[in-house]
Amino acid sequence: MRKSKILVIDDDSSLLRVTEYSLKEKGYAVFAFPEPKSALDFLRKEEEIDLVLSDLALPGMDGIAVLKEVKKFASQTKVIIITAFATVETAVEAMKQGASDYITKPFSQDELVLVVKKALKEKFLEEENQNLKFQLQEKYRFENIVGESSRMQQVFELIAKVSQTNSNVLILGESGTGKELVAKALHYNSPFKEGPFVAVQSAAIPINLLESELFGYEKGAFSGAYKTKAGMFELADGGSIFLDEIGEMSLETQAKILRVIQEKEFTPVGGTKPIKVQVRIIAATNLDLEKQVKEKKFREDLYYRLNVIAINLPPLRERKEDIPLLVEFLLKKYNQPDSKISQEVWNAFHKYFWPGNVRELENIMERALVLKNKKNLSIEDLPAKLTQDAGLTGNDFLNEFPEGGVKLEELEKGLIQKALQKSQGNQTQAAKLLGLTRATLIYRMEKFNLQP
Image (cartoon, rainbow, N blue to C red; front, side):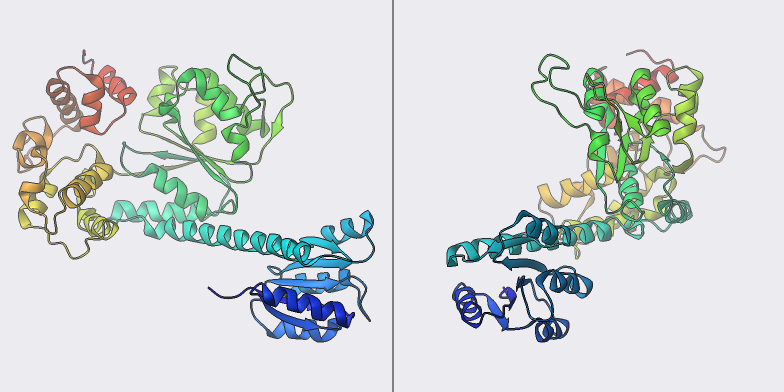
């Protein structure tokens, strides 16, 4: 680990020597100058100066002027002002111009070291934060979403266009197709990327708690509200909020989200003053919202405000040519890049219907590689549902695609019936088998008029 580099400027030669000695004794690399011009020339040439410690009263240039110059060409470098004039005005002016702190003469060695450590800690935390943001942006570049099929290429093109706008986006697709991954790619490639990304799993939050989670609440707003809490919209201010499974929200909550879109403000539960926010809304659902609108289960006005731009994610069964790429990606993820996949496994992957989509593929790979600690993947490592003909479709679907085609709705209905039968009518377990949420399963049961 490199030593922190500190530049000290002070025309008091004795104080300059003492300060230099004190900081070197603590392990810092110190460069001492009696006047500002040579110090600034050195700063322009020397890389990675972490901190400038400058006296306020200097020949030819005061400490505030030094501070301004440092911020021009070394904005990440922290500056501490040394002053003999302990006035509020001096401190406020220095802080306004970007100083991290100030220290008043005379000061002890312990006081000096404490102030220096505090400034350096702030710098390193800021750098760490920037590095994390960079890593997130790299991780969620839309190019990193795996797929070479024509359907996915269309998705990539749309994400590239949409990410540079501030329009609301609606992501459509079955469970497990990667809706949150696309939402993050949109955020981290957008003008909002410096702001927060806040994800809300709507179906995972009880309906009676969702409003307070989204909009926050004031102390005493309801039983158990012992203190004021900021909601997710407030936390997402300046960034993006991802409303997953928005089709599961109540009509009352939908109305309040509509107000945020229209008025750029909301009122916390139990509050009286609205809070202004600037936030991009990215919504997602695996439901048919147009049908939900017709059935009065989803607000039409909110649907059109969200559906400014729609991104449709194809299910895995409609882009099976991407499976080898996805498998290669998952092998690297689980540190098994050299693992071999038998031809029987590839055949099973190709024949399987993939109701749980990419998420199901990842679960199967993790189970085989991590839990079984296997280097090479054989047909024996796969779940029975992938190796049994009945498991391929759940509708007595043939291994070879029928010459006359197949009705997708009948196939879906058969899969649901098979899952309910296998789970002995347990809807939660049936939903898990299909890679769906329980609410989505119930909706699809109603769609096909299936009884529990």
